Image (spheres, rainbow, N blue to C red):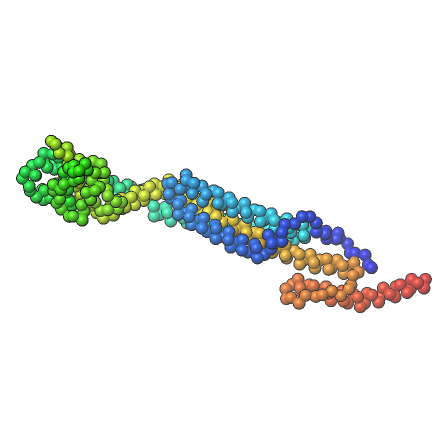
Length: 386
């Protein structure tokens, strides 16, 4: 056997406790990459939708979306990266080539994602800055104020009607000289719909209501069985109904009257008013966040892009380990040839450069075994003769 050529031999892989093979297999990592990317997308979708909400950041859902869930994903990716790296070091040992390839891939990925995130943040800042200015929250505030003024005017009309007509004297006068109350009421509130007055009587130990006056649209009437539970003032029978109602209990002389007055409101007024208030609140949040818009891209990168990027780095580490193992096998084969091991070896039939180098090494070993072996026998015979 010939001595090895100069240079230190490749170090043998280290032995130690390894993680289960399934945790660093390529199918498991590919599925993990898909799941973590989907989870990051969902988190970004939910979080970015609530960025301009004044209540999300201080609420438990906001803490989960913006802190707990991204940190959990980053922790999971860190564990998988540690498993992949430790498995490669235990099974293949250290490799300068693997580290060099991985470093280049990681540098390119980081440069691309960070630069794209900065561009995204700058674009969002410019787009929102060109569209959004102080006129929007001011307009929202004016809209909310106008809606409130309209509601207050309507409430003032209702209170004026209640003060003039829903009292003992007015009811007594009407009972003695009935007239068209609704026409008179509409002189004050042109949106008046219905007016109801009932006399509370006792029959057989039970309180009953006897109709004194029922005027207007009967479909808007308050059911008599609910009048006992109505508190004086503004009330609603159900959420979203297009009416404002006023309840009144009048005690006059020896009688007790239960009164209800109904006036029409624009359909969906409360919902629209709530939408205007919500839009105004969001506009104030946007205005407060405007100084941070240039950093929006980095926030998206740090919170939602790092987990998928970590999985890409794990796959890059697996690829660099695979590439380094092929070069390592080829280097070991050349070392054995240089050391005099010229036995025929299997030559791969692939078409890349490493397979071509393996075939060339196999051909060199074959030629050395045919020529170098004969020369060694002649040298041994000459030594025996001496």
